[in-house]
Length: 220
Image (cartoon, rainbow, N blue to C red; front, side, top):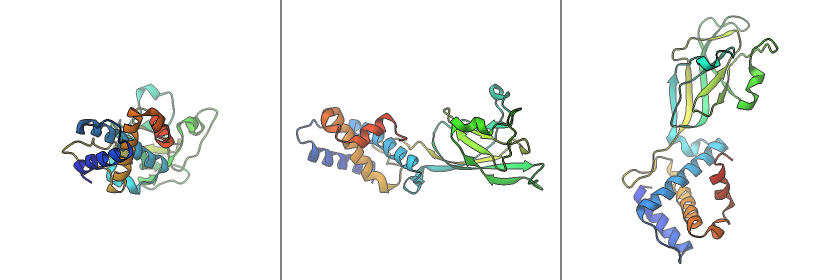
């Protein structure tokens, strides 16, 4: 569905459900469509249903670094910041192990995603000696991925991490079509109509609990 078709569909659906409401200019409709696009994309991210948003999933090779501010944490590195990053899909690390499951050369291994709040359980220190055959990773709020590994694992810091992630979709504009897979275009239009109804009639929009919840916390 082109951006023009999405605007036309919005107008048609909005007129049907809100006969007494005000009309919207195309520029205003685009604002609703872009808000709705983020809502619908984040719903798919929270469900980990990648098929519907495969058009905005990217693979990127990265080089890990040890940030100065975290030198006090042993065996931890991070990826560069990705400004367009909005959701983790998967990742792999290129590592060498020097004891217990020793690798003869560098190996690519799948990482295990963990929640940030439990990351401390995987740190190596005087009170906790961990054994991690594959690294643990978690999402940080600044658009980076933090990587925790054990004392037997080494990263070389050059093209040693690949990340598959969901990037922020391009804005829908008059001459720019929706980048997200067409299978959810109609959902975006429907959500945009709900948002427009909320502006005109908050009480009526209250009937759409799903939209209200997603506006507060899209990842729920």
